Structures are given as C-alpha cells and as structure tokens.
Length: 83
Image 1 (cartoon, one colour):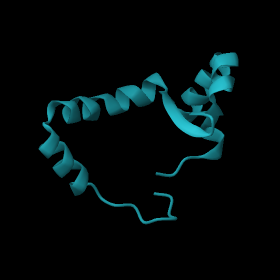
Image 2 (cartoon, one colour):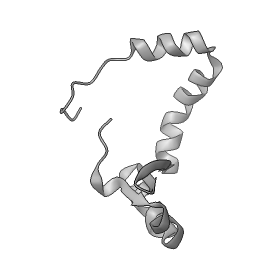
Image 3 (tube, one colour):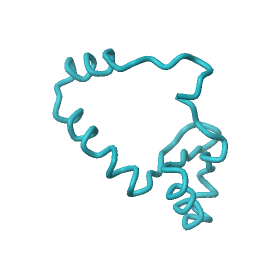
Image 4 (cartoon, one colour):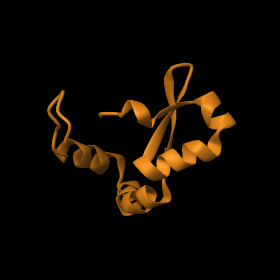
C-alpha cells in the first residue's frame, strides 16, 4: 500500500486539530493516524466511505475461507509503482 506523506497525521494532531484533519480527509479521501509513529487509525471522508461501503459489506458477509480466497484473487501491485 502506498501512503502519501501528506495523508499522515499524528494522534496528537488529530486531537488538537480535528477539523483540519477532517478537511484533509475530505480532500485526500482518507488520512492515516499514527500514534507513537505506528499506524493507529484511518479517517475516511464520507465520500470515500460511501464508495467503499458496498465492498466492505460484501466482504463482511463472507466466511473466513471466502475472505481469504477473495483477497488472494485480487491483483497484486508491483512494488515501487503508483497504480
């Protein structure tokens, strides 16, 4: 997964400047929240969430074996390429 540097915010920045982080998510689709320099959460814009929601609901309806099959059938990105 490629993560844009500008789409990363710290946990403390999220707490102090939620509105700015929400606006950044609106602009970029999502922002990744780090706590102690480790991934902690993802804030999606409502537009991005609505776009992904049908897929999320479909995956949630599958049993574990089918989820694993679904994931293994996804196309693999080449490392170092932005697709």
